[in-house]
Amino acid sequence: MDQRDAILSRLLDLHPKKIDLSLGRTERLLAAMGHPERRLPPIIHVAGTNGKGSTLAFLRAILESAGLRAHVYTSPHLLRFNERIRLAGTLVDDDRLRRALEDCERANGAQPVTFFEITTVAAFTLFAEEPADWLLLETGLGGRYDSTNVIEAPKATIITSVSHDHPEFLGDTVEKIAHEKAGIFKRGVPAIIGFQQDAARNVLEREARRVGAPVFIAGEDFQIHEENGRLVFQDEKGLLDLPLPRLPGRHQQANAAGAIAALRAVAPDIGAEHIEAGLLRAEWPARLQLLSRGRVAELVPPGSEVWLDGGHNDDGGRVLAEAMAEFEEKSARPLVFVCGAQVTKDVGALLKHFAGLAREVAAVPVEGEHKSWPPEEIAALARAEGMRAAAAGSVEEALAIIAQGSYEVPPRILIAGSLYLAAGVLALNGSVIE
Image (cartoon, rainbow, N blue to C red):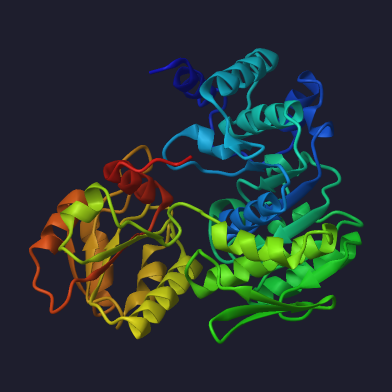
């Protein structure tokens, strides 16, 4: 274990709970660190259930295409903690990260603080030290009491798709969850509300107007659609004829729309050519990522497609199934779903979207500290939806079983159900995130 990992391990023990939504401990530690949150570049603050990371990926790619420097804060990481903190385009190096963590550890002393809180303060400290034009800031969980919500005056806020997730912290209805996400809205700060189901949109719009935030609502104030292989974006400023995003799936078009709407509201000097370039260069690992080389590609039948995604809830299952159906229309292949999930997730809600679409399901455990659904139970849920299913002891074992199967054409394999599962697959594959 290196010094960075040793510090991160110690920080996990500073609070008896992994998650304890509150702003007080973060504010206390920020004060002890000299208030780095007051010395940050202009901020775009993003919350939501699904699509936050992809939206930030589009924002970053567009800004960088315009020659601007952007800090980025996201969570969780996939392969190593450094992925959470990008300084002006580059992942934080181990030495700078270790120093920031040690400074925060000393300032905190033995006082209780959650892992996310103290690492958020470390990130703010690093962002305050390095010049940049923008900071793209993702909430960890919720919004109202998320540690990132100590920011008083962002330039814009974005709420991506809101759906059921983390009911133990955010509430058991979409309305309650939307209310918590809306806590990032600020008076006078443009609030971009992405494409939502009606219940969530109504709450978000009401809360934005209540706090006095100018509102830009997807489907009303800005529109997006695909036409002749192009992406058409339209708002009150006019129409943009754009290429389809590099990130596949119609849901990514919606995420791109939220990013474009935010920049049109607060950075109008960014031209259409920069938006176009950004859509074509945006990358976001484990979001419908095609694994065409590496160990995973070697384990499957020759010619197979292997898609990796961190989708893990009802809405995530819906957009993944829609993407797989779209792929099927363009190129028919038997779909095999390799699925693993933590016990805190409603894996049945995810699986139901693949009934009649997936030929078979290979259920696997999620390795690591997070308790996972037993593969046998996932397989039983898949069978209840009418899919053929079997349990495997690991992703590697599942892929080996698939390799022995009989298919009329090489299969399309989707591995999804958990970001932690996706992380394990990337590690197995020998992938690197830079």
